[in-house]
Image 1 (cartoon, rainbow, N blue to C red):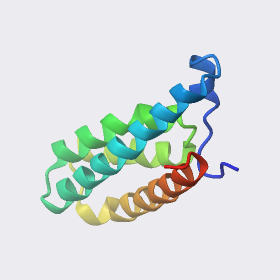
Image 2: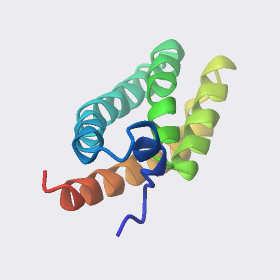
Image 3: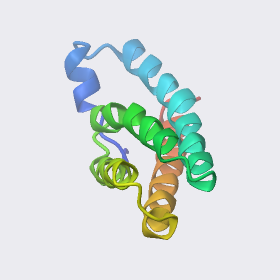
Image 4: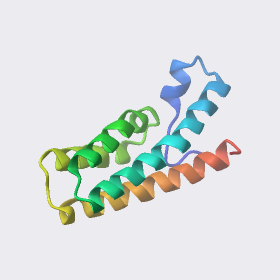
Length: 114
């Protein structure tokens, strides 16, 4: 049972094609953790542009997966990067997003036998 995600949008755009949904899940598992690392590296390097681009890249995926809390975190990260805020202002949001994505990835792997 999905606790951290909701694939209703994925199934809606695919006419309930399970193989399509599985491919979308696989893409999530490849791309989102990679971009999460880019956010963390950008934060460490004080590279606001890198943080912004990585957050912006995963934003539609989080929406597609019905990950509302994570989506809100990404919006906050985007806004922070545009205003070139201080690291301490966004550190907890990034940590929260990383944990949420980690739990979701674990759940997806289990639910889709990946």
